[in-house]
Amino acid sequence: MRKSPFILLLGLLTVACSVAQAKPTLTVAYAGSMGVVMDRHIDPNFAQTHDASIHGIGQGAWALARLLAAGQLHADVFVSVTPGPMQLLISEGLVQHAVPVASTQMVIAYSPKSRFAARFAQAAQGKQAWYRILESKGLRFGRTDPATDPQGRNIILSFQLAALYYRQPNLVKTILGPLRNPRQIFTEPSLLSRLESGQIDAVAGYLSAVRSHHLPYIRLPDEINLGEPAYMQSWYNRASFSVQAAGGKTVQVKPQPLVFYAAVLGKARHPRLAHDFVNFLRSPAAQAMFHATGYSPPQGHPLS
Picture 1 (cartoon, rainbow, N blue to C red):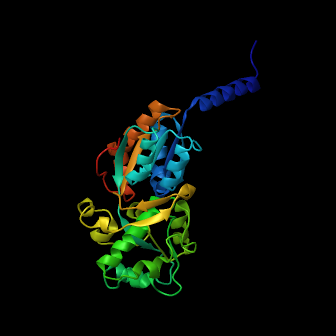
Picture 2: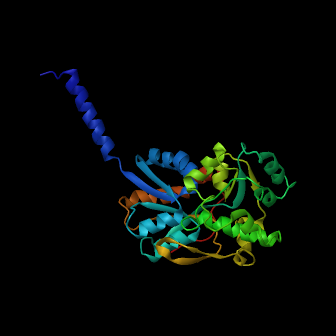
């Protein structure tokens, strides 16, 4: 007996739904500053070539690492910035091996809508001191929380180094105020969006994220930007501070390489696909995406 068009259509829809349901979903937790390259480039490309769906979770890397360690968050892949968050998961037995996939450096980014934009543009040309502009009355400066985010910690370390480099002992206190200044701290995913909209005038952040958002910025000397490995022991280690992290524990913060590491988590629901994803991050195709969005090549050695 000939089936009606409605029954045939229903059958096709049922098959399509079954195929969609069969497609695996890979959960990738990544440092929030990587939002543009992950959401717009890496994830869609991998999903298409591997017939999978990607569920991305972008937050401060320390916050993600602690959620993963506590079992409050489950993911297949973790991509961190600086070794610290990844080393936490290695010590907890949740990660066996992590590989560098990109690197970056600290810069000062400013909003083209800011009333200070012309002065920042002059500073980018070396005609003004960038820190003097940040000291201006009424300037709205943004950063992330040093208790939960490596970028928030690196901003403070960079400013400590700037104080030494420019011989301005009050620079950190004058510009940043308290280490966890509630008037300056925003979530990592929202920080550059606020800068783009003009809600804040300037931020200190990663060159990779700033260039991904096509925002104007001021380069910092190698002695300040935390991106030159040769200075790690001879100069960067002069900066340090203590901050109260999750659970009330006080931790001593020292500079670490601004390297992005990727790893498969031990409890990954899709381990084979997770390994493919980490390998893809180091492939020429993904490295071209990193380069196009402002990242530098990976540096350093694997972690284990």
